[in-house]
Length: 126
Image (cartoon, rainbow, N blue to C red; front, top):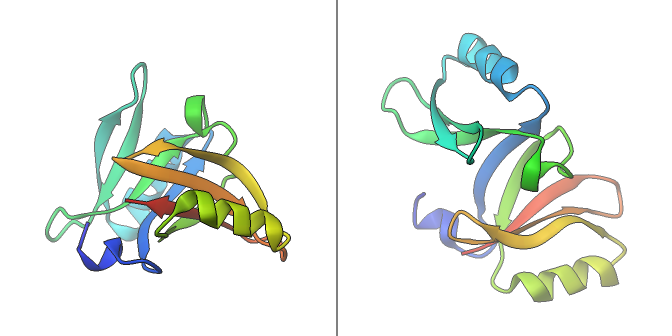
């Protein structure tokens, strides 16, 4: 992850959570040429999707089970915030909804929110 992705307001990560992560991983490998590397989740693997030219991880494809069971099947951007608890309070105050979390993930804290228009996004505090 670049230093820019860690700045408040930056999009720091993108992933997709679905029931058939294996099949969807293969779909994106075929359609856009991504390569994949398994990421152990204990009794199953999620996938880090990598650009073929340089192997840099650009997205994740995850199984909708375990800690990810409540995440809707949509490409999610994760926006960096300074204080996730303050951001969650603002989500609720401004008419949004928290769908999942906050919880630990990737060395930080994340949550998934729905804004008043119904759009879903993730928030991430490093």
